Length: 164
Image 1 (cartoon, rainbow, N blue to C red):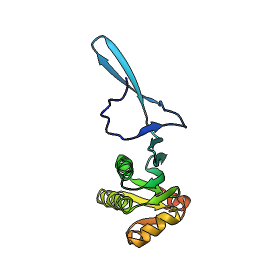
Image 2: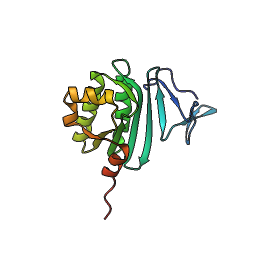
Image 3: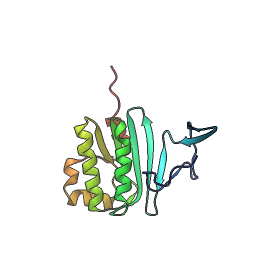
Image 4: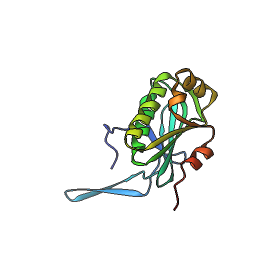
């Protein structure tokens, strides 16, 4: 069973460099026929001409979103969707180490996601912004209100679960 043409997700999904099939099977029974669709459970990419979004589930309470390429007026909705899809985990790390260009609309998407997550008592942190991304974040004063770490490792350790 293929995904409907009006699927709400933009771009196409890839796994390990090729079209993916993964672990969860959905069975659709219609009359006498039965069809199966395999859908992603974790770790996927959204591929666009200028932006690829990778999502990696680091652990049960933490997910990392890695945009690769340009975040502009054309690609910001793809980032917005990836961040909204990650609202099910309490901690979200957005790794900006592979962002070549960050437009103001991209900063607004990040700020809106942070506001939404803060309201839901969840965290969003940014890590390793490139020089281009850091410049836009500082020029817009977003750097003052967003939680930014210089490395992904430091962000992951700051978001480590509390053990009793």
